[in-house]
Length: 358
Ligand code: GLA
Image (cartoon, rainbow, N blue to C red; front, top):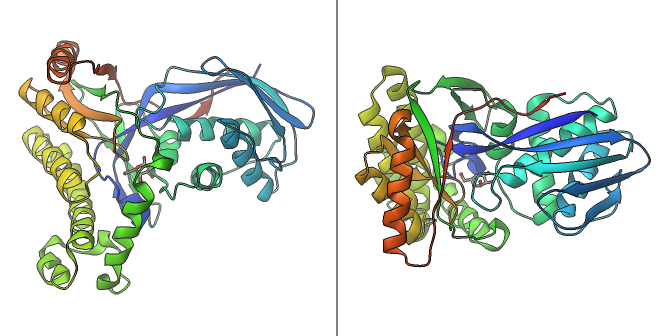
């Protein structure tokens, strides 16, 4: 039976830059959603090892679906719009990617579905076209005005590499990660659905500041211009824009630091990025701040929150030889600091992007 696999992602730097066509540096991780499916009929009928019940929607996406069925219907509808024949399928999903942890489980679901539905209907879709389609499906399903990063990372990822993607031009290149390091994802256990959180509000607050750029995108503005540009803006839009302009600059800087093997500089840029998300973009929570602090104290090379924020996970670069011990120590300190809260540690590697795997 055909099988397809789409990984989650950890964004290393470039947070909340994709929705204004900026630079991001995510890696696909070795945790994924897998779909085994057979073509047939005119319905998409899916079971999931992780969720109750069956999803059963029209293969042309003409019915909205409920729960995670909304994503299935939205992907089918987007594919129908680019000419997919309404070939149905019967399949089973399984996943070792934690849900709601800020590691893009919904993007991985969209990508695995899109890949299978296109393939089983013999429709060719270019990788970044598929990512854009899945981004539209996300918006159609749950109304979140997200950028293209998560879907693109799930598709473009490569083992041992991050992907530097310009979300405006869609130019991208692979960035090798330090060979003796692992990616540690520490899930705070704080759950906030993107659709009900401040994601949309943040994009609106940022939009209020953009006119001062006279049509330029934040990624094309040098941070040395900030004082002048922000002078006439109110406090909130000013801080939102400052985050995005400095964050784009940090992505360029971290690519150079990784190329030079300057891990101290990588750590400094992660710390600066986290502080900017906490103070200027205001999408962190005390639990994420604590995890970053505890990881740094425990000897991490670099640590920051990852993803949209308001809960979810932090990403840590740590020497592979000490990664497990570091994760255990941080989890213990976190328990002491937030009684009743548990951090879940995932020791990951950067992995290949989505593919048919049979
Ligand atoms: C979520 C969105 C992405 C991106 C990040 C923040 O993961 O889905 O498009 O905006 O938040 O960087």
